[in-house]
Image (cartoon, rainbow, N blue to C red):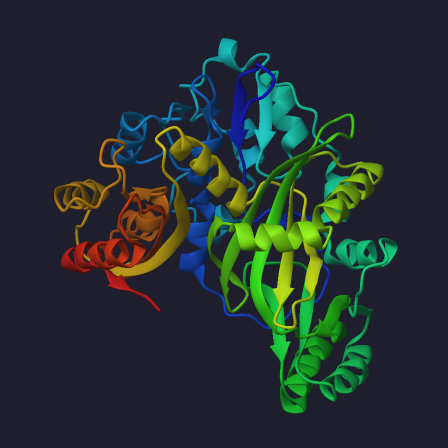
Length: 452
């Protein structure tokens, strides 16, 4: 990741949006899933592709030793903490703890060499409160924008206004009360289904599809109850567009405002939640060039810089079924899953291959371990090795086993739990379907149940 010759400390949280969101704002109805919240807390291990040989990755929970050994064996070079920043059995308090606060308050990172840290550059997944304190505590260099700036530019209100400032077609509107949501929503329903968006909603949370007046009435009633308790309402509503595909553009804004294009990734979403990324094909790239899409991205970068932001950016976009391109669905002024995928691709390019990034949500009980999974994948010829040229490259281990660890910390063994395995699927000269089928066989043989 490092382009400046400085060693970097890479660290972050994948639910940064909750630190930017006003806690007094009303929330849309959603399903509370503590197990998936634990998975999100363990996702920081996915940041390892950003590391060079002299960089250090700090994760909330120490990386699985077998996983780390495998990554080192195939050529990823990085250092990481060998102790947890907090106990995995942190409960709801653990799921809300800011990793930068943990870093500055814990005594559990004694394996970090203070001489190494002094002068290293802090590279966060996203700028959230505590970044400055962590940099000051360990003598780290950092050139991050102010948290308030990052909060502003990551709001969907900013993305909506950005569309208007750039003269792009935008049918979004902001509502500031449950009554306004009801009246404006009823008007939109006459044209078809519409979306309600939380200004800091992310990956399936905070986006609600409204297809009938009955659903709209229930939602507005739910929000009215919160208003009576003093909560404020601020949501974006917009017509539900029939899309052909989702894609995203990654670019970097240097501290002097220079724009650097990074990649375009086609994105697979299911019910608004991220499912995976794969490299944009030539046909899509040709359409984007014809539509002057990349000129719009440069304008987005200019606007972000003028708003005080520099750093990594991922702009979510859509190609509609009618052929129209929606350049700005939302702006993510941070690193992203698709940027991680791009950095995995950079590694794979050295071995003359490429991959797609995805995940599987798995349920399991019993004493299955990551060592067993790696061993069986290898024996069945499914585990990616550079000399093999194809296979499944596991990008995470803690996300799969975190809820098993939490359960065992509470003295409960063999309880059925849920986890998520992130991986890159590298085809080589084979085919993805055969590789996916073989991977599924391995998972089922170890008594993993694949959740829909």
